[in-house]
Every structure is written in C-alpha cells, then in structure tokens.
Image 1: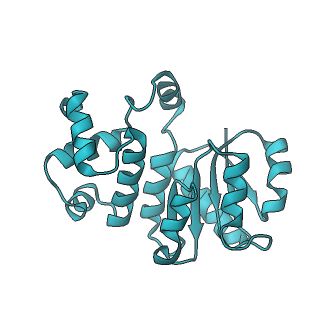
Image 2: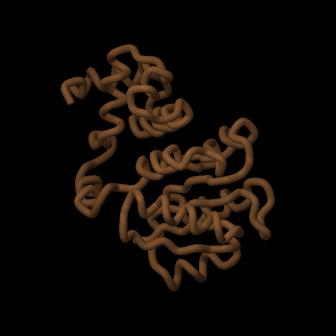
Image 3: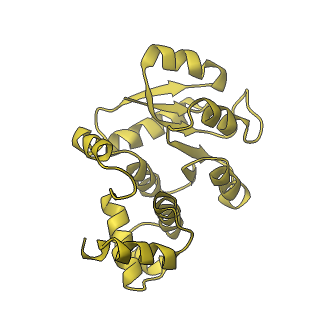
Length: 200
C-alpha cells in the first residue's frame, strides 16, 4: 500500500514524507509534482492508501484537484495539506470529500496527529479494521473521544488532555460522527450507550 504526496514544492513533499514515516516507518511514499501525472504514477507504483494533496498545483484551480481525486478514488482517504487558510477552505474541502484539512504552517505534531488518525498503525491494525464492520470498530482515539464526551469535557479540555490542537479535536469528532452516522455529541453519546460502548 502506498501514500501519494501531491505537491509541486519538493521540500514540502520531502517534509510530508518524513512525517508519514514518523507515523508508519517503512511505508511506501510516492511524490507527485502535478495532478496530471497521478494516474500513470498509481499504475506504476501501486494501490493508494492515502492521498496528501496541496490545493495550489500548476494544473489545478480552486478545489479541482480534490474533486478529480475523489471522483476517481472515492474510497481512498484524502488529506489537504496547503498554505491556504483553514478559515477560507476547510469547511468547503470537508464537504467536498476531504477527510482532513491541515495548514502547512501547522506544528509538525498537529500534522502527525492528523496522519495518525487516517493511517493504521501496522498491518495487524489493517487486518482488524478489515475484519470488523463499521461502525462497531473504533480506533483507540475514537474510544477516547467517546469516554471524554461522557465526562462532559469541552474541545479545549480534550485538546489539553490529549496534547493536540482544538482544530485536530474538531476533525476527530467530524470523523467519529461520520463513522457513527450521527450529527452531534448528544447523538454520539446515545449511540455509545445504546451499544454498550461506555465500558470500552
């Protein structure tokens, strides 16, 4: 399985590759400088496990790169890693199908935490996810979020306890709600109680 880093800046591609390897050492990472060579690169390099995409490429405009990738690879997680401000693009990108929005100016630990939420820790985790039907299989982080919801903690409290940013907490909740098919903390807690998850 392969991670594709799509960015026209070679130093940025190298930096993201390094951070991916912090999460999963030895994982194959392929650098792609432009969107129009992605399909041929995938044909040569193998099935994608994750895309890391810069919004501003020489051959894209606005969210065209995001739309193109999700149209061809709808089931592959996609992270936007861009110099654009989150306040300008994050909501639109998530609505368009991105799984995560990260600013290039973010602390490296924030980017690592985001990548960790999308990449299984190892092959055993891959197998566990494949064997368990959604949404009954939660990640360790999602289990923590359920328990912290039950404690009535705010996003700021959760961020402090987990040593991550409030932005990352919001992204984790967005992914948790989507996995459970709910729209709020209250609905997530009801789902957890109904399924006996508060003992996890």
